[in-house]
Amino acid sequence: MSPQELIRTRFAPSPSGHLHVGGARTAMFCLAFAKRYGSDHGQMLLRIEDTDQRRSSDAASMAFLEDLEWLGISWDEGPKFGDSGGGDTGPYFQSKRLSIYEEHLNGLLERGQAYRAFETAEQLNEKRAEARAAKQPYRYDRAALELSEKQVSDLLAAGTPYVVRFKVPDEAITVHDEVLGEVRTEARQLDDFIIWKADGFPTYHLAVVIDDALMGVTHVIRGQEHLNNTPKHVVLQDALGFDRPIYAHLSLIMNPDGSKMSKRDQDKALRRAVKEAGLEESPSGASGPVIEAASWSAWLARKDAQLQPDETERLAQELGVQLPEINVNDFRRAGYLPEVLLNYLALLGWSPGGDLEQFDMAFLIENFDLKRVVKSPARFDRDKLLAFNLDAIQAMSSSQFESRLRTYCEAEAPLFIEQLTDLQFKQVAASNQERSKTLRDPVDACQFLVLPTESIKIQDSKSVRRAMAGGPPTGADHLRQLKSQLADLDLWDVATLEGVVEAYAQEHADGKLGKVAQPLRVAVTGTTVSPPIYDTLVMLGQTGTIARIEQCLDQTGSHAK
Image (cartoon, rainbow, N blue to C red; front, side, top):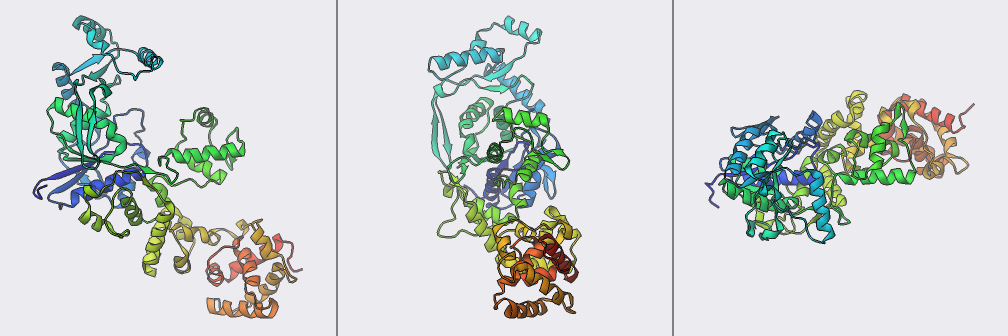
């Protein structure tokens, strides 16, 4: 490939909400492939494929733009968003290109390369049933071609709904794929597919072929789920007189168990939880049913029905279900770093060679080559991704970690910004960096800081009971004696607290610090898990610590009288 040739790739999502990680990988590879040749010779465009009227067109459906921005994936041409977009081959929304599609459709009709078909859905279903009964694959029988011109004119005049089908040439189709090699489709495997729907919109096949040609796309890099569409696109390109772009189909991303990693995984997790709980009606939250009755009934009635994203989140929270991360937004909210997610996704279907695994986007752009894209499906290993994220966090300076944590909290945990002082926030970051695998971990570990004292409830767990019982003296006894010592301190810092608590443990707990530290942790957080105990007490402050010890003693019935 000549370095002077203009390389143009495209990422063309449908407006269906947040971006699946498979789509993120495709966008990243499209960008890396184009930019390897330099900004003067490589461009990526973004096109929104929104001709499916069943999909939402509200702002939520365009959430994938925010995901791309968070990942740092930009485009040269396409809808303006942030610092990306512009260009002169638009419009970049397919719904705004109908006149362009109609012009090319009319050309196909005039040349006899496409034709109108008036069968109803019921009639087609009957023919499919007949094929199944005969144990034969269904193939459209071209009955519409037997209609005379007058019959067609009369049907059109009567306003009879119709679709337009492409007349597929009766010959085998061979496509060269940069990943898969030669892919051959026999003539009998492809029937006259629909290119124009009864609702007045083109199908994906017609629109994508026209757009790729008119927008100058030279390389189509996409997932293998589109491989079966490629023969249809090739015959359309030939009929319309367009050059064929170079194709490269990426392997699918699978779950560890070999199932396809899809947005339905979250739905499956919720359905299992609902079944295990024996729920027939939506659980009720503080303000009524978590899911409205009509939506709940429709969801239970059909296995292919899915709740809206906000409904999914509410139900998962109410049932205490940890949903698997599927979309980019899931990983962002879980506290993963965008550069780490990109790094890991790059390894799913591409190899840099050698033992190298951790690298940045600049490295990927410099080294990306379609010849190193593997054919076999990639398995998504969340443990490995988490290990990558841990490595990245540990490699940060304390100031970098604090800055990244602050940015995360501004979006996902605003109470940490609103209620904590700058000093407290610094303490949260400093005391959690070494033990955090995600940016979410400090938030979860330090929830006790932003909750009012009365909201701290002592968990009824084996570890809590063990911390508070035992003895004598019991954990509650230790708290009662320590409370006065802590209340009398003039200096509240790690060194002072360490001296007081360890001296107390030596005298009253045979030097076993855990016998004292764990009851303290339970009192101030409600659990036996928190950052180091002295950091925890310093962050909470003297007044807050004493108040929570008193509340714990009240709750356990052991307050001094």
